[in-house]
Length: 141
Image (tube, rainbow, N blue to C red):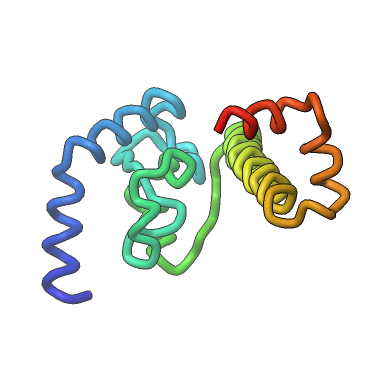
């Protein structure tokens, strides 16, 4: 690890954003190690380590509670998600719904563009039919 990376990590762990995320994780999951059940030397661990996945450092779905011993054993070699299954599923569903929403937006834009630029397509006859909302909007342009 370079000196720059060490300084960056030190600054990160002193930041307001990290302290806020750490407080959230401890209030959500409690002060008990998710691996061994210990309540001593509790730490908030990144499931995917910051040394390898810097962009995920402030994601709520990327933190779990470990004791110092289990965290040192895990190091940045293992990517073990020890959170309760319910928490993992919740974050997976939220991510899937966000992607599905943006995918539907992109598909909608593609259909709209194909109707505008390829008036002979099947979509255009449906979207640009007289009296449709899209044709009314285009008439006002």
